[in-house]
Amino acid sequence: MKIQLPEHVKQIIGRLQAAGYAAYAVGGCVRDTLLGKEPKDWDITTSALPGQVKALFPRTVDTGIRHGTVTVMLNRTGYEVTTYRIDGEYEDGRHPKAVTFTDSLLEDLRRRDFTVNAMAYNEESGLVDAFSGVEDLSRGVIRCVGDPRERFREDALRMLRALRFAAQLDFSIDEGTKEAVRDLSGTIARVSAERIQTELVKLLVSDRPEELRTACELGLTSVFLPEFDRMMITAQNNKHHCYSVGEHTLHTLGEIEPDRVLRLTMLFHDVAKPVCVSTDEKGQNHFHGHQEEGARMAREILRRLKFDNRTTDSVCRLIRFHDERPPLFGRTVRRLASRIGPEYMEDLVKVKRADVLGQSMYRRDDKLRYAQDMGRIFRELCSEGQCMKKSDLAVNGRDLMQMGMRPGPALGAVLDGLYEKVLEEPELNTKEKLLALAHNMQTSHI
Ligand code: ATP
Ligand code: MG
Image 1 (tube, rainbow, N blue to C red):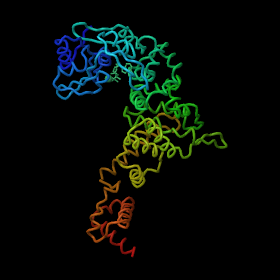
Image 2 (cartoon, rainbow, N blue to C red):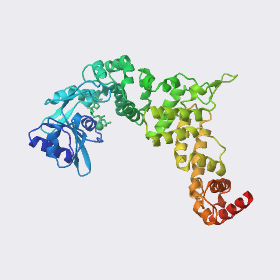
Image 3 (cartoon, helix red, strand yellow):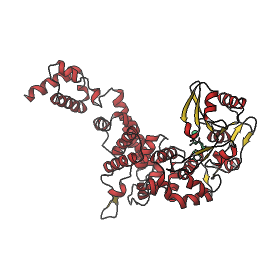
Image 4 (cartoon, rainbow, N blue to C red):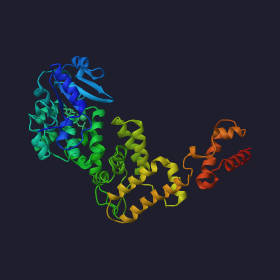
């Protein structure tokens, strides 16, 4: 089997070999190339020790020297070059307790998680496939290298990685590997939130985000996302819906583009339904307040999973407004945009559309048209240059001070008042009109 290695990778492998070391492209890049996909990055595994790697290349970065990884920079691209190693147990489920370097490629491949990730390649040896990775690739199977229970005991994150790769590659999971996840799912509690976050996001933005259902069935989400398990057992009993809250959520994930904020928003948009549910006299369920409570809960969950503030804020904002349904006029859409922030409106429309596509067919066309119209009206307002956030006002604090106002809360109140007026009557948003209005507001205050 022949793989076309990029020039840079050939150079790195060539230089290591010329110095007497063995070196191979390894892992994800070999897997993706064999699948006919463009690898995101090329990793290299070598018998050279980190210091020896550094001595051979003019520009390197100590990415993870203790674990044997040096990044070699060629032009502006970085290539991770890692010394063959045998991992010890993952003590805190985060870093191996101790890594031992080895001069055996086979040992290095043996410590890797799945057969499809445990192949190496260089031009001299061709493909090194000691664990039937090619066969599993062609069958579309994710299978642990060696005994799955042992591998998951070494590093519990591998259980979630199995689902993530199945979702990304559209593969199934080998039965033995799956059984081992079922038995050991509880041990994922030992894995750090950061590592879980990385895999969860990769799963969510994959082509098969609904694989999260398997994570629930195998007992993984009950550990790091128990809120999702509650969604799975909450019925909607409502004509707008044909699925449980959890199933609805899984459907909406597939109806929105694979963007991390949008997928996280869909995952948590109804997270509060299990706690906001009430049943009316006709037996229908309602979920009053689930937008606000959902935004609050999502914030808590995202913080727990160590998401950055920017992602958290965007997701929570979209959740807070996902079910707003004002009658659609210029004025109401302008108001909505000013509340959520105009920069969120396009995403809000996408969220609303995906939400509808995960519901029953009841009035589906009307609901889709509603989302579409909201987007259209918003774009009209934008093209008219309408003011939908305070910084779009034709006057600012400095203008008011030039008019003789002193800085302070009163000035802020005048700006707020002007903004309020402009939201009602967009044509007031000129400097002249606003300064006149400000003048009146001031004199009426005295
Ligand atoms: P991606 O395209 O998402 O980067 P990848 O296969 O490169 O996929 P990485 O997480 O970047 O995945 O890991 C690179 C390689 O290192 C894997 O292919 C695998 O061989 C090995 N590996 C990574 N994490 C683990 C782990 N927790 N246990 C065992 N081997 C691992
Ligand atoms: Mg990778």
